[in-house]
Length: 119
Image 1 (cartoon, rainbow, N blue to C red):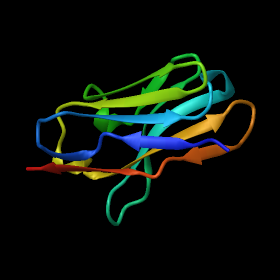
Image 2 (image 1 turned 30 degrees about the vertical axis):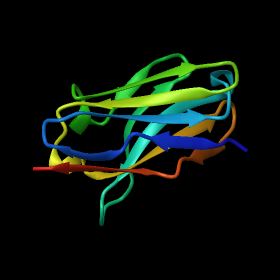
Image 3 (image 1 turned 135 degrees about the horizontal axis):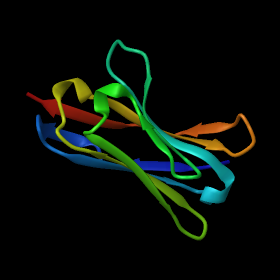
């Protein structure tokens, strides 16, 4: 069982920045992707950004050039970050971390962290 601990959400004014982090209790070696999703009220959960074990990143169009996903790994944990700049009110959502185990269809979700951007 992989444990995910998220942090970094909060309230920020439009144009501001936040950094989310998600610590996974597994080495990067055992993961295929680490990703951030978000879900706004009344909307479906959507993929925001993902990074592969090789370091390739992709973003949904609405956050390109504003958000950056990156990760690091320690002896027994892997952490994925989402640096969010130039935040807009439409970025308001609960953000969830997701990791997928390499070579399997198994994935794990974080508990979610609220990001609220005021206009």
